[in-house]
Image (cartoon, helix red, strand yellow):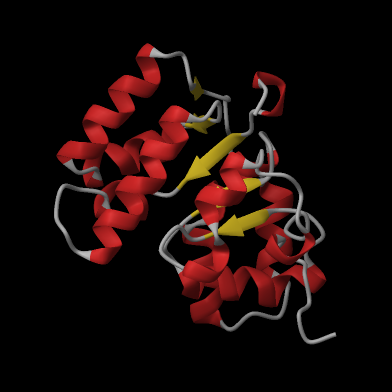
Amino acid sequence: MRAGDSKRLVIDASIARAAGRADHPVSKACRSFLESVLSICHQTVLTGSITEEWNHHQSRFTLFWRSSMVARKKVARPGAAANEALRTCIQNSGLTERECAAALKDAHLIEAAIMSDLRVLSLDETVRAIFRKAAPNVALLRPVHWANPTKHDDHVIEWLEGGAKDERARQLGFDDSA
């Protein structure tokens, strides 16, 4: 993969917490994912809110990985501020009160993705489903790609090796019932 194919990836703290030296399948999958990001030419996106979450939840392995990413200049630091239009659309999208609260709690991931290359990686399948439910009514969600490195069907490492190209089925606005 060429350096020009590099994508800026928003990596949720759920991955930072789970990645470790344990032999547990989730830990191994997250560790392999982070090692792939380090060896492939992709960058990670660290906004203030993402950095704060990582500082509270990252494993020892992830701390070392993050230091290696910084040393290799593979960290993008956009000046992310809350996107009030996105948050208002989420609140008016028809989600239940509980779903809306969960979506707003993780809206910073979407905000960072919008400011970078529309790529979010997270273990949180519940929030992915909530964002997919809201996407028909929230245009800003539709193009965002969401993948889970522990979900075998997501083939995340292969996707990264191929340049993390646009794939309609990964987008939150993709309707797989059609």
